[in-house]
Image (cartoon, rainbow, N blue to C red; front, side, top):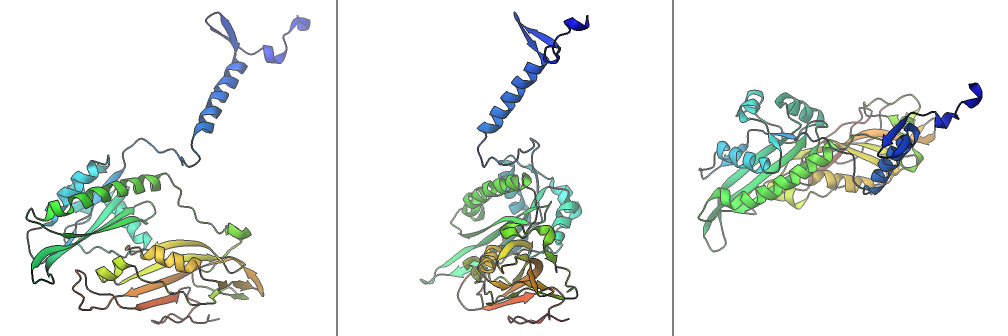
Length: 355
């Protein structure tokens, strides 16, 4: 009868657990409580949950210059493959790598992120390692001659084309030869690479200019080099001059670091996104200098607005007689603002916008 109907909350289906009856409503509340308690117990910095599938990594054909002989690309590849596999990474078979990147094919160690993405996609791996070895003889102050060099390793994420981290291992060989001299360094590098790749796998690449009240959707986009009518591009009040790192000096690096920069309405740098990397800590040096630089903000109809633009820092090496493995490092540092609305000249001065 209608008058004997149970209230709605009592009409839920009931389940029997032992001698107790539990309605479906109470069961859902119990499950929700358990789920909430588990989430509450996660550490604040736990980050996104990662899939269980092993992360794939390819080791590209090494760039080897060995003045003394005895170290082949195959020897170096075998050592790196075994070391990375011990970190739980799924190493792409060498035949698959060589079919996409034949031995002897020139590789770009200073690529744009889009080119680095394309290279990883061609190989078919989530991540990859670029390898450069410089090995030779060196005379010490007591006229003794030793064999040594530097092993450069670059860990790249295919999804974004970004450099996750790089390692530069200086070594001097003993009687046992090359592999024992670099084994510990390669093992430590593999651990850092694996941790960096797994961290990157769980992150979204996102880009925004939200700090300081400047929403990304509100920021002008001048990265294509076109100044809209009535718009003045942002300009630095003091010229940024990043110092090359000790690693870059020792290796005699000539490279360009290119970044996309978002400057807020107040002239403060809000975001720096690397779009062409070089390693050796140069990206961090560029970002540190940019974030310390105050800008005149972009203007639209005379009013300050947030804006994105592109900047490039060109680091040029010059040979010096300092007995280092990689040569010396000159002070030829250039900064160029790269929207095409700016004059683009090989100088470290800033230039006014063209209308």
